[in-house]
Image 1 (spheres, rainbow, N blue to C red):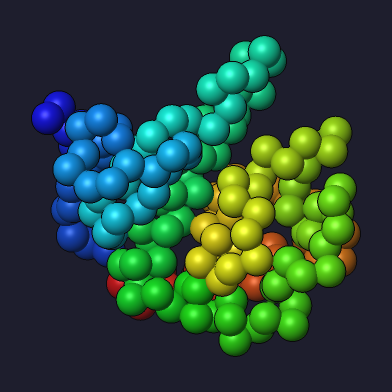
Image 2: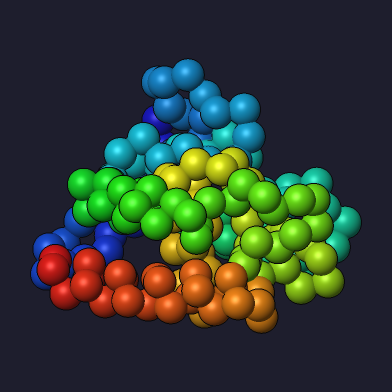
Length: 163
């Protein structure tokens, strides 16, 4: 197995994150995209945007795919506090009621949903997409986009200062 190890420092502790492809992993593979197996193990079956003709957009989606999965890893480091906090504010953060084409507060220039890596109406996926938006400060310019931005800015400061 040719696992790529990425070293990073978080919370005053040096860590190693194992990033492997589905063919290298000894677990049932994801069918597409990435899956975060633990706070230290992310597996990719493919990268988002692999089949796009627009190379710039393809690179954007690939990068965003990785950061979305890092959002899941961060949530696991927190003991799932991120998804729990989303659930606690479900009235505001749920994607229910967001129809096709509704950005639901997430950035989507030109109507492309390149800042939503998984549209599932689940707390963990919403947190990971908000982690992506927070990382690059990219939100829809609506009241809900402002709400998601402010929510993440408040909670991330607390979580980062805790660790």
